[in-house]
Image (cartoon, rainbow, N blue to C red; front, side, top):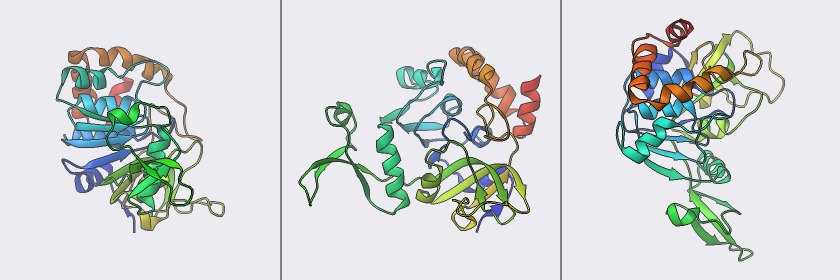
Length: 280
């Protein structure tokens, strides 16, 4: 059953150095507050998984938390490159970063396989594509029924999955809506999970079948208002496009990035304190 706790306690108890950590959320509900807490607690040697690593993974990589990235697209959406990611790959700063690239369909199917307790995922994909030449985890198999040649990839089974959602009740049942990615599958595939939410309520007042993450599949639920900022939470607040544009300049220079991380994350107690510092 889910435990209602603070984000700092959840990260301390469930995320350990060397863990495989998935942090999912598509366009909105990106778990920025949790990412900041991982940086604040100086977690190290993490293998980070995310279908679309964006600013939060740029921050984690630049802060020295990651040793490997498994992904299917990376960038500052609508703006350009992730400069800390590029620096880690191209110049090994602040430490070398291994990368393992997949397609979106590949990672989505791999999460489903992990959630289904299967060893691998099978799909029609990669036909005419050169990516399998550079990723040895992508294999081909023959269908035992039709003989068709198919792609196969290992199931994703993170040590910890972290997501953000709109609402949970006091038992830990989680409600999320709007544009969804692979949050459900990523949680079900993981050994442990942390869900940050905008608010905890007495009654979700949910329609039938709306609660796709019941309390018994979640380890910790943490109330963190605005915990997806600068991404958005459907029904709560909009995307902070100004910050996404500003991040391009902040992250270009190592010293400026390091100073930003120190002032805004390391020296703040929690995400609400971060927001106060950010507001100036």
